Image: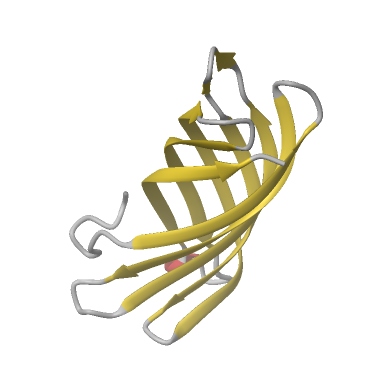
Length: 139
């Protein structure tokens, strides 16, 4: 979100597991692999691993998950790697429960991955946004 015209739209893949403590509240985590190309054709790769909470209300067969997560990330660009970086994520979605074990829908995510150095002149904040079409399997 804060890269202006320096990055092209990228792609991401994620996997997560959340355990429901009640009908509406769950805890768990996920790992994401994000990939973008800069205008100079150099790859930016982010790998945030986060843990957090979910509040998920229901209306009929529709589920609305709201998540807040915190964790760490690896950021790699132009043969430079930053690890560990703080990673924070907020998400909201709408899913349709197709069957007892499957649901599908849309989610929107906002990520913050700051890069903090001892020399504060080099500090930076990576703000990322994504929208995805998701399929969820329910145990």
